[in-house]
Each structure stands twice: as structure tokens, then as C-alpha cells.
Amino acid sequence: MRTLLGMPIRIGSTVFGDLYVTEKAQAQPFTDEDQVMLEALTVVAGGVIDLTRQRLEAQSHRATGETIRQINRALLVEDDPAHVMPLVLTQARRLRQAEAAAVFTTSGGEHSSFDVVAAEGVGIGALLEAARSKVLHSVSTGASVHWTDAESPSLLSEGIRDRYNSVVPVRVSDGTWAVLFVVGWIPATRVTHRYTEGVLEALGDQVGLVMDRVAARHNHDVLMQVDDRERIARDLHDLVIQRIFAAALTLQGATRLDAPPAVQDRIERTIGELDATIRDIRSTIFAVTPARNGTSVQEHVSELIDSYAVNLGFSPVLRCDEAIAEMLTESIRLALLLVVREALSNVARHAHATSAEVAVTVEADHLVVAVTDDGVGLPDQVAESGLDNVRTRARQHGGSMDLLAHTPRGTVLRWQLPLHD
Image (cartoon, helix red, strand yellow):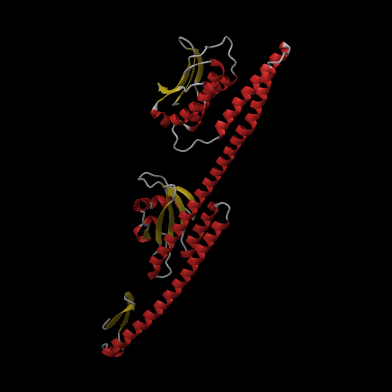
């Protein structure tokens, strides 16, 4: 090559490329007129390229707008928002011919796992592990990360160059991170890859919206269940228990009549059955009524004790280990409260006590509930309708229940179960 003339092709202030001409005819050198002509050609070329780029970007804008509208319409129409997530992935791949896409959740810690919510394409698990460092960096900073295949050979598609990969993190309402991961996408033109990155970040926002809608739907279902349980509990208490109690009072009035001993005995047995039925219904009410969030075990037991103060004629003393809440599962907490309820019911009905103590402690890796009264003590024969339920609950958790005499007078109900397997 003996002669060369080159000019940059500019689009505004950006250099898109260069236009070169070489080897002028008859081996003549390039002149100033040639330079002016080439400069004019670069202006024309820049204009053509800019118009082409604008047309492609306009198409991308339309496609992106339609994608967002489709996702929003699906969110409004779908009964289950989780069904919208595959649509987000399909649109993310379609927009830029991506090879694979996935949405996963993570806590963002160095050793945290990736829980895939939805995925399209082959080998998402391997691709995620290959990009693990970039994913964790993106989540830790809260900023999107975009890179080319040349920077990450493990994500390189055979025979295809200049593909891009993107990680878009979004903080969702429960405090975790939802991440949109798109592999092997192609920008419409060389100068529009940043626009596509912005599109994928917008789709990441849609992922966050879908995740929040899914969480809101779940919370709504939970609240509906809570409302149903509370309604059932109110109906049981306000309607069923009151009617049974009224029937029991009527029968108690009948015991004052001059009736044969056999009839008197039958009436007393019926009153006992009604009393046991009321206790069972109250236990059911307690079981179906959800605990208030943030209420400690000590507060629950204290409220329960206060509710029995009128029937007892005094307020029992409560001793409760402060650290016990962290050791209890929800099922053990519920069993504990039901045991205290049954014990206080027995004290109110049978003990004729003037004081009582409820102790909830931990002894040698065992939860121990001891309800002590200063009443008349144990009868010769103990009817264990309610106590049998207490003993069964202890056995279900690998524990035991004992009914003991208290010195100098009274009774101790001791219920214990292991806190660790």
C-alpha cells in the first residue's frame, strides 16, 4: 500500500468508526479535494448509520414498551402472580435473543445459596456457579453488573462472539434479593448495548414487582385464614359455650329439687360432661386463635393467668425464665399454654385454693411447667378427662406429666418435655 487517506465517521460527538481509501488510480497522491470529498462521505455515512441506529432503537423502544405492558396486564389478570414470572423470562430472552434467563433469590452472603424461582434455557445451574463472583458482587453493591463473553470464557457460546451477560439485583419486601440473570444477549447495534442494559434493569424492576405481588398474595391468604379462625373462635365462645353453660346452670338448679337419687346422680354426671365439653371447646378456641406477633411466652402465660383471676378469687404468681422463648417451637409453645389453661381450670373447679403458682423453667434441657396450689389436695380417685389430654400432649413431645401432693397441703401438676432430640 503506497497511499492512504482516512477519516473518522462521527455520530454527533461519538466516533462510530473510520472510513479509509487507498491506492489512488495511476498511483497519484491524495489531494485536498480528495480529503474534502472523503470528509463529505463520512458525514453521509454517519447520517445513514445514525438513522439506522435510531430506527433500531425505536423498534427496541416499541418492543420494550409492549413487553412491559404484557407483564403488567398479566399481573392484573392472573389469579396467581407467580405464573407471570415465566413471561418475564420469555420476554427478556426474546428482546435480545438471549441464550438463557433465570430469576433466583438469595440472602446475599458469601456462602448463600441461589434458590431458582424460574428459569429458561439449558444449564442455568452451571451458568450461575460460573458467574457466582459477579452475582455476589452485584447483590452486595445493589448495582447491576454487565459483561461480555470475552471476560468470562465459561459463559462463551461456541462460535458466537460479542454476546453479553447481565445480573440485575432487586431488593424485595421481605428483605431478600431477587436477581434477574440473563445470559448471552445480543445488542441491536454496537452502540446500543447500554440501552439494552437499561431495558434489562427495567425488567429487573418488574421481577421485584412480581415477587412483591406473590408475597402480598400469600399474606392476604394468611390474613383470610386468621380472620376465619378468629370468627370461628368468637362463634364458639359467644354462642356454643354460652348455651352449654346455660344448660348446665339449669341442671344445677334441678339438683335442688326433690328427685330420686338415681336422677340426681344422672344430673350430676351430665353437668360434669357439659363442664368437660366447655373445657374442650375453650382449648379448641385457644388452638385456632393465632398468637400475636411479637408477644413473648411470659406475656402469653401472664394474660392466661389474669383471665382466670375472677374464677380463682386470686391472681396466681408467675415465674418464667426469660430466655425460654428462643428454645420453643410453635407447637411446644401452644402445648405449654394449653397445659397451663387445663391446670388452672382444675384449680378453679376442685382445689378450693387461696393461692397458686405457675412456674415455667428449664431444667437439664427440659421444659418444666409446674402449677402448684394450696388447696384440698388430691382426692382418692382423680377423673382424668382433661388431665389425660395434658399427659397425651407431653407424650407426643417425648415428655411426661405427674400429679403430686404438695406439702403441707395442696397439689402440684408437673409437666415436662425435652427441648432437644
